[in-house]
Each structure stands twice: as structure tokens, then as C-alpha cells.
Length: 147
Ligand code: MN
Image (cartoon, rainbow, N blue to C red; front, side):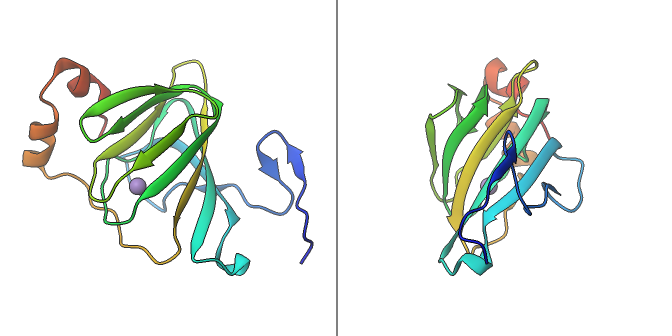
């Protein structure tokens, strides 16, 4: 394996496939995934690069495993728990265990970010109707959250 993998275009790397974010579902929009360091890297974690196209969003979900996120491209907003934060390149985002989270790209900018996770991790869960209602307690949250 070549120790150096070149960036061949902005945020695209030689031999690294640009994959769909998740296999199926309608609870996200316009998100791609690239596994930069996966199982072959021999680590207990994986480093992925996700890109949300303009106006798109990731799934609203929570799980036991944590996310360590580094924003790399564009601009957007991030829901962590019940707070929404503006983010820009080189900001760091910590998502603790069992904390609702969703990332949205600005209407006119994509949002690209690195996301570090445990290689062995639990599956995400999405909110029930009741949990969703409990989350949508402010107009800001109600407008932000997409399912
Ligand atoms: Mn997640």
C-alpha cells in the first residue's frame, strides 16, 4: 500500500471512493462519504470525510459512540443536543454519547468535515415522534431540524 495518498481534486483523494452517506433513507439530503482511514489502517478508529451539498443535511440521530468532528470546508450549522451552532473551517465539534446531532450546509456553501469514530460502534437511532416533539421546543429548533 502506498504510504501517501494524494489529493487529486479539492477534497477528493486518489483511490478513495466517494460513497453515498448511507445505503438508504429519506432522512438526509445530499451527503457523500469518503473513508480516509478505515479498517485497513489498523486503528481502533476510523476517519471519514463527509460532504453535505448546499442546503443538504445529515440524519438527525444519536448513539452511544462519540464523534470528533473537524470542519474542513464551506459553512453550515450543527445541532448538538438542543443547541445550534454556526461552524466554519477548522472549528472542532464534539458530539457526546447519546446526544442528538444533525449537520446542515448553508444554502450557498457545502459543508465538508472530518469525522473520527470508533471502528467498533453501535448503530445510530433516530427520534421517535415523541422525542422529535420534545426536541422542537423552540422556533429555531423547529425550523432547523429536518427528518
Ligand atoms: Mn452520528
